Length: 195
Image (cartoon, rainbow, N blue to C red; front, side, top):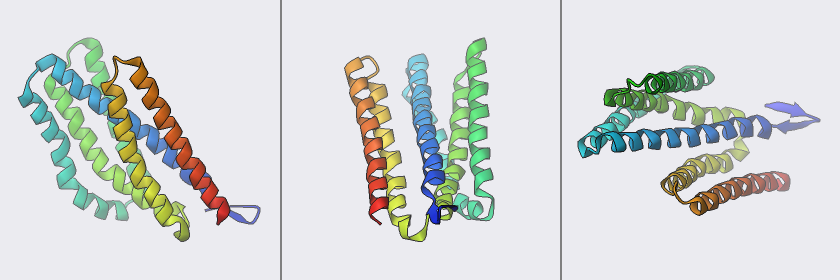
């Protein structure tokens, strides 16, 4: 933890990582929705969508119980960087496939698989890192913030994307998401000042 003027200043490093992960989560949810939307538009097949869902969920279901054990033994920062790096490389590869016009359904399956495997390791690494950045007396407060944020972001992103043709819906949800996030951060800071 960083010491500034005799006080422990853990909030800045933690909130920097937390905000980065929140933005990353929004990007991931939008990308996942875009892939499903593309599959729907291109194939119109329920079987293709069901297969994509299985490809995205099965690695996470199988790896998540084991990932935490390995994350505890490995450098968490490296795990998060490798996981994000793999997802970014996979996204660049898919973008290239779209650019040259050779994208196929199996390409999307491959991306969903890579994203699922990387996410299985990334999330436990982030949660475990929190306990290293935050003082013990603040862990329950931060744990609540960590658990609440992904769910809220997912709901807001999905709603905003589903309302993509309705500018009013998008504006309302962007305002709701922004206001909610700032409200959480202000409340978090006020609670810090009271302690």
